[in-house]
Amino acid sequence: MIITGTHINYYHVCKRELWLFANGIQMEHTSELVGEGKLIHEYAYPQRSEKYSEIELDGIKIDYYDAKNKIVHEIKKSDKVEKAHSWQVKYYLFVLEKKGITGVKGILEYPTLRLREEIELQEDDRLYLQKIMQEIETICRQEAMPPRIGKKICRACSYYDFCWSGEEP
Image 1 (spheres, rainbow, N blue to C red):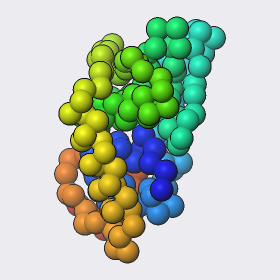
Image 2 (image 1 turned 60 degrees about the horizontal axis):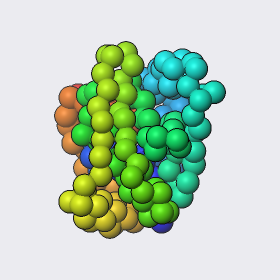
Image 3 (image 1 turned 180 degrees about the vertical axis):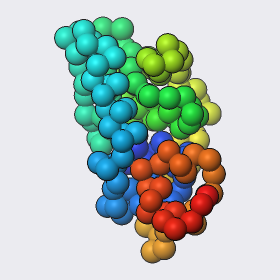
């Protein structure tokens, strides 16, 4: 199974969202919030696409990679699930390191909030990522989807209608 940054992100937000995404039930195309995030990605740093590259490697898709300074840039709309964003960037650093590209750092950017956070990959992070990659495979291969989490974040999820039609979280 190819694990993407989205798998890592969803693992930290909601196991049910992870399972649905991994099993081909994708609702992102119907979400206004996801669409808003794509617009921010496209227009927040218009000069950046001339300077840096968007790269895809082993299932990961990095927003911008500054090869000269070895920096991964990941753009997010809001910092509501910052921990998940941070692990997504650490996963990108982990994958690059596995491909022999070492010394890479990450910058998590929230242009609408005017916030930036530097991300580094530590030894404990590598062990944690190896552990959760196994857990992600286990969750994604389960026959039944995990239960709803019933948290405030559910209202901003693209699967909200799927999970909560007729009910309130």
